[in-house]
Image (cartoon, rainbow, N blue to C red; front, side, top):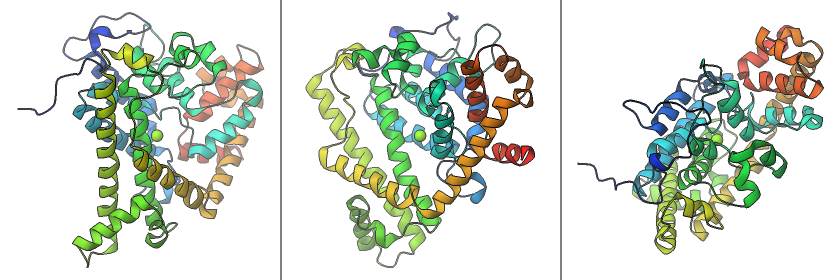
Length: 376
Ligand code: MG
């Protein structure tokens, strides 16, 4: 017998879904959110995540996270939290698996480079691009563009959005103009993303030799677990020590998030997902002390890992490659595949730039490197 509670009244219920843009017959033996999840897993963008960087470039080592393994870790953390709180696990999984579909090659360095090149043409933002991938760029169905996902999955994918973009997006952008919230499943996927990368980047950073256990002990979240694991296992070797610490850190923040969110839900007692959306702030939260520790670790990783000289060397190269590719396809659109070429020649400079950005953003790390070398 399952110990999972029934779907809570404040969860996303399929019968109350705001639906898909293009009407479709209901699935025969799956739920609507399960169908979203399956469409995401079958998408081209999802398969490419295996060759896209999180922090380290894909070919630097076989043990580092890629966007695919990151997305799977987000999904499993988010599902655990959702299940305990009586929320919709299929929806939270769909959002988690899709949340990074819009990432360029080479992580944030790629997005910054593309954003710089797109400045005059409306900019480039990976989160918005994830929505663009599922709404427009996946070409798999005869009857509609994109994957035609439910409103709730799309709402979760679009985590943040400028007012200007929100106005252009219509219904899905409304909450950013009205200062409303997304459903709880979306809120959970968002926090699970941060939990996943904070923890796996500690692991990857240590493996790469860019972080040290000694330095990490300055972080209370890390040090508490370090002391605890050493107390239980005084002679533990470093490799296992690190895994034990990371397991302990994930457990601590996830437990805190569940307890704090449950207390918030008990106090607010929302009757439906609409109540959740109307609330003036997010309901899925850490307690104040854990939030501080979590944020401190995030800041630590920014300074000591993401801005590490070794990582910067890689990001400088990445920026150059993305800028060169973008400039090349702007002047020689015929060097893109036929479907991109014909789209690029239909509109004005701004339309062409968007097509080029879509093409470059869709590349994997290794494909971008190969194209850069081929065109160079
Ligand atoms: Mg992510």
